[in-house]
Image (cartoon, rainbow, N blue to C red; front, side):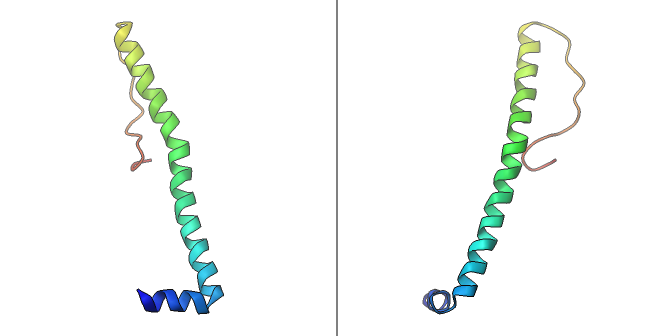
Length: 69
């Protein structure tokens, strides 16, 4: 661990590269969550409303969660 910190402190290019990589990783995850979470919540709300109103179930478009697109 000490060697990695020394290497990052002596090589600004490596530090910037690591920061960019981590930023892309976190940004990609947040992009998936921001896109899929509202769709998942809307489907859940529609299903709950149909159950409360005693309406027939709507055809499901398939699995849609944070893991499976």
